[in-house]
Length: 293
Ligand SMILES: [Fe+2]
Ligand SMILES: [Fe+2]
Image 1 (cartoon, rainbow, N blue to C red):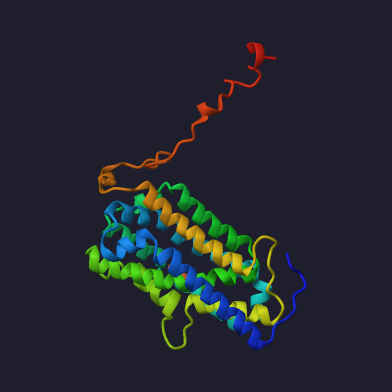
Image 2: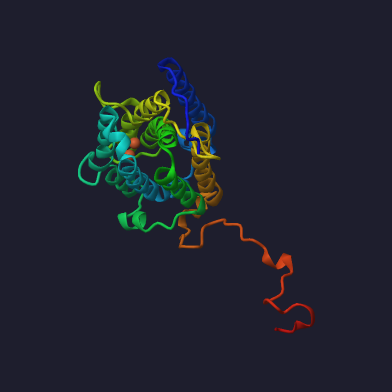
């Protein structure tokens, strides 16, 4: 962890924020908007079972990313109470996640997407995540609960780009998959809240990340952990999201799988390791002579 950091001038801090935002945008465009899952979705070619799998696996992420973000306020309360403008911005975005369009917040809209795709609330709540989705959820929770504020700000900058991803998703659901605008509202809402902002005096969730990083850089508080840091956080966040999409495509390759029941620990198309090739003895101590100690 870097402890002593030189404060940047306003111009230099702005330059870094612009560079990192451009990086997040470029990586989202290259790795996510161009992903076969998304290209197929835009053209209506992504099979229903993949779309359903995405929704089934996304519900847990949508819930836990918000509960983990709420802990950031407590963990860094000494910073926020001395930076009231950022505190306002941070609290209004958390409040939005938990209260728009009503009690329960964004996750209730996610339930509506699931129901439009034929998934019950129970199926979403109890979904056994594919390994790639588990990795995506746990990665985000760990970043938000252990990362430095600068790394978390970088994650929020990526959240701004997720708004554009959600906008593309919304258009595809409505125009190619016959979802109603209301049932797809989770995605149109995220375009507004994460990317566009919900009004002239309201920052988008991406802008919250930029404002936070700008202040940290100007005050010499942009700590980075060894092996992590601002740039890496943006890079790995997009890569982990890409991994989730890879997993969805890899494990749900054809329309025929629509009828396949997925139960815990029996994910479709999973590659099982071939232990027998290793020629291991049946038990410890059963080596030469087959004598157990
Ligand atoms: Fe949200
Ligand atoms: Fe958000």
